[in-house]
Image 1: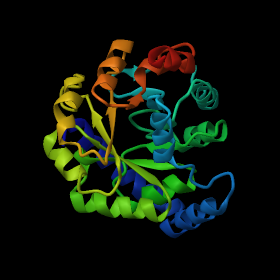
Image 2: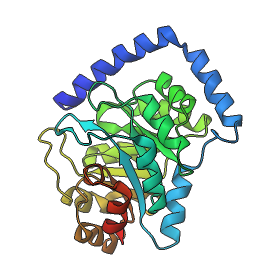
Image 3: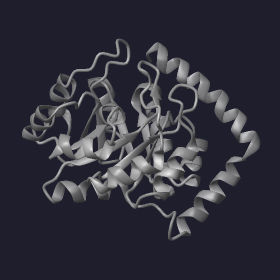
Image 4: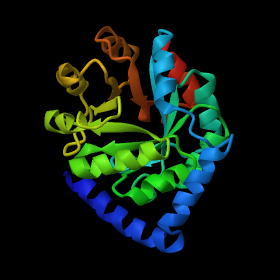
Amino acid sequence: MSDILEKIVATKKIEITNISKQISLENQREIALENNQSPVLKPRGFINSIHQKIASGQAGVITEIKKASPSKGVLRENFNPAEIARSYEKHGAAGLSVLTDVDYFQGCNAYLQEARAACTIPVLRKDFTIDPYQVYEARAIGADAILLIVACLELNQMKELEACAHELGLDVLVEVHNAPELEQALELKTPLLGINNRNLKTFEVTLQTTLSLMSMVPKNKTLVTESGILSRSDVQLMRTKQVNAFLVGEAFMRASDPGVALSELFS
């Protein structure tokens, strides 16, 4: 695990201990199951939305709503999650990825709730999920999918968290950075497999990461390339290699209208 991930995971453990004193796991589970019965809050089908876009010949783009990052600081001063979500939906996003981590990304659960309430597309809770408590919490705040990062989890943990997510109707995006992590990710049931082009130790980004690992990805998995998609030629390169799902954040967060930036990049 990289230093930054170790630090984040240590913070998460404290965060989970503190919040579970305010809202018990049983309460989170109750709210999550109630949400599943609600016409407004029931899961919207994150994977299905990406597959529908790809089936129609378009790219399945997961667009990020992120105020800040540990390496770049604040990305967007005028930060309105509902407005950003509406713009993304209008311009063809398959789903949203909303950062809810408070300490390192200046996110919060309310941002996810505001974004989801403003649109009809499914929403991934982008956080550092290490405990079943967070899976119930994700569904309780209305998330349609969660992220599992192989770099900060053991295989048995991932399997437990995935099973918990599936029990609640949540989809799972599993994220890898290298070949050993990819081998572990392939042990999971989820068809959605993200390759992050950012090196967690150096923070350098290269699309070569996706290109060099994609031959290991079976045909029954949907490959999502993450980080470093900055130009139309990047998109074109990936699509000629049959990579049709993308997670893009920073490039859009710095644009005056994120949705317009999305349609320009993928037009």
